[in-house]
Amino acid sequence: MFFQRCAQCKRLSNNVQDILSSLKTHMAFPVKSLTKSCKSRGSNLRVHFKNTRETAEAIKGIHIRKASKYLQEVTLKKQCVPFRRYVGGVGRCAQAKQCGWTQGRWPRKSAEFLLHMLKNAESNAERKAVCSMQWEETITYDVKTL
Image (tube, rainbow, N blue to C red; front, side, top):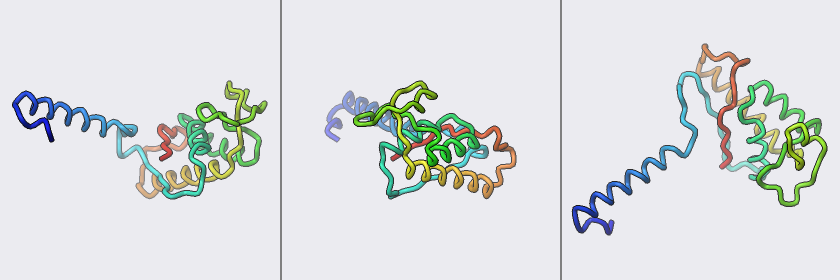
């Protein structure tokens, strides 16, 4: 690096490296207990990012059974996904009032993909033999779309 000329610059360089390394470790949601958590992911999927992001935000913090029921109802157009960030060109629908919003859609492919991810996470937990997890108490804490 170009900061290595004097001792003061070396300290500055170390501080910058510490800051950058701390930023890298706080990018994802920290897992409190590895024995009580499970993960699932997909890559190179043929779904729209913006629709999937809004659908993932809709199920964040909901129990896993309610989230899967919600996603099934989205595919049947009985409930909509409220669009909060990417709202350009999104129409209004009356079903979005249930979530306290005005704009919403029914992203079928994204809902099916996330439903598959929830089922995959459930089977990963069963394979991991997480005995202490009760599925009635399981909550989707963090959902990332990359």
